[in-house]
Image (cartoon, rainbow, N blue to C red; front, side, top):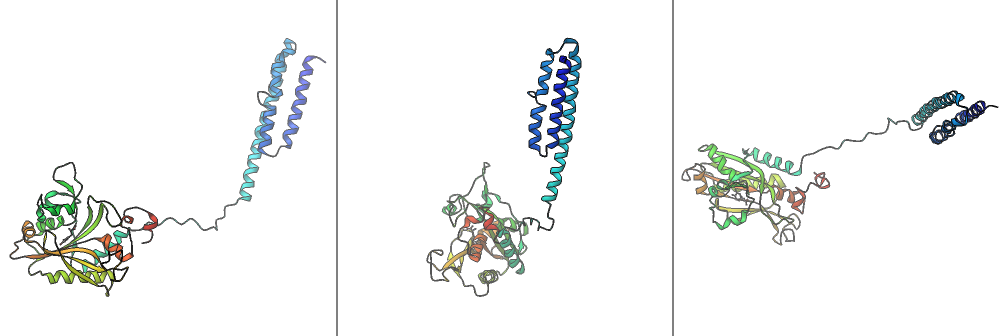
Length: 347
Ligand code: DAH
């Protein structure tokens, strides 16, 4: 037997063996081992190319060509088998893990309005029924509007109550209350009568705790006209409390001081926790403060363009976060702007 036929025979035997093994293969893992055994660099077929030198020189091209044919044939068969295995796998998957279209779908998460948006809208609604319109004024204010024109001059000790955030522009600050909107509304409407609700965010330099935040909402109320009395103020606010908390709510007014009103007062609502007996939530007082109010100070009326000899007015400043806390028994003001959905989802 010549070297030529010897190598070729060997190749043929190898090819047969490879082909019969390939026939029996049913899965991708065995297919990969087969490939490693017969088609990788270290496989026997590749070894033939190195062994060509064993054959006589003139036979080498022929043997080489034959080895190439064997290799190509095995490669083709490999690819066929690979496709079949893939196809079978896919069909099995489709059959066994069929998509169950009868399963209920995933419900999309529903967004909702923030509790304070809801409470603010309720406040607007109540006051709208009494003829108050919403009037918006800027959150970034001048020192003049926030303090000076409200009868709080630069070195007035009352400024300590409204310590704020300053911008890099002198005289421009984050408003500490909605009261500067009073002056803006008066300057726009004077000498016409006014009934406005001024809502929005206010900012203060505060030590944050369960009842203090550096930002919070206020709703300012302003009525200016002829013959407006303290009785109008009291009636308006008591009616508001009833509509907000229910007919049975108990309220009281205490004298208080604010530079932009004269006389000034604060309104309290009976403590929801102890029912007026006194507890830790109300600081043993039995009452919780919800707003400051009073008759608009003559200086402020004049700054707004109204002659205090002819016109009078009342104003109030409500804390909507306070109002929500009372209504929904929320014990920490930080919940409002903490952005925790577990809190927000409850409303
Ligand atoms: N601006 C006051 C504050 O932020 C609240 C206030 C008190 C507003 C009395 C008023 C008022 O309009 O009459 O503390």
